[in-house]
Image (cartoon, rainbow, N blue to C red; front, side):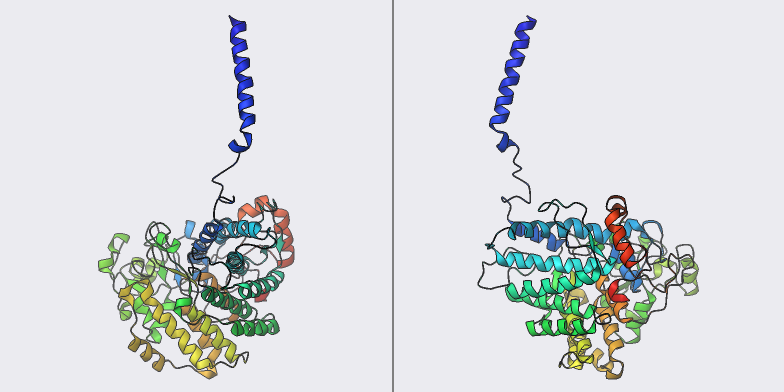
Length: 510
């Protein structure tokens, strides 16, 4: 009986082996692999575009350094509020961009560049631009980063990429953006399925040259010659012409705004607008304050902060000062006549920072202000006054896109410009201050421009227990995951750049 059973089992195993071998290729082909030829790479590009929306590191670090938004709390919110290193947060940009943007753009480029004559050249150029913009943000935040070998895990099986020096990264980014933007063609197959501009090549080109302008201006202090040449190349190509050209990530209930999700959930009662920012807007009668701010007058707890209790009157806004923690901010609030620290002004999380709020990465407003600076520097023949006014106006006109209830009327814009005219004798500071406002909720660019220009002229955060001896944080620290798994390449970057801490300056900020 046993022999019969063994024979049956042996026959069954032979049949199974033969059957598996017969269908081996079919069974072991992953038909749902997003990098396979079965999936249109436009979906990978769209995933990359959506994920260029900023991570919450901007709330805890970038926007805190430039004194626009701060939390007095520690723990997971420790960051620019205390000028302390919190690597559970400093890695947020890194993880989000490398895993969700660079991986996707790298996969697309690996597919398309493998072809001698890509059938979809515009898709390739669009991908190059999204990748270039993302690398610019990464290197501006951290300094030296994986670049030339990044995003090649599938195409080249590089899992521990080398770090490139920021100077080399910027040089290559400028060339990449120039080439990719120039190569975009209306005669090539259209890519109407992409979510940024729906295949509009002229808008893509204006985005590309506006990105080039930003790259050039970032080099104004470290390499003025290259900066001026890059700026002029961008102007010659044609930059953004209106708010219709903005690089904006549109969010919905499926793809929510990261900041909106945080500010309307667990941390709804823990972030406040900084007095520096509120006071600046108040001092110039800026109508944007009423659009951006919300104060729950008399609030003594989180439950008191309901939309119906919110006050938007600019005269009622009180910003939170820097340098205090949740043990000391209560006395500050009391001395100011407030009911508690819950009584300080917040960003209007029900409108400006709602979960479906748009996230603006590069805008017409910012572009016009950079052109105004270039004109003041003598790099372009543009009219600095006109460019400045257009930049301020464009940002005010953007408010309605967050919510119809916070629209700024044209007569209020005109009144502001008349009351606060362009001052050629103080042009760079005035432009820098307006760029700061225009970058509200765009932490990486606000942080970058503050380091580059020194404007606005901020007082240092005086919190007593800091991790820095410098006046301000100069960069974000590398993720612990890189320290653990890619330490040799990280070490080479640190040996070039300086210690992996919040003090070390990046290359263009020397």
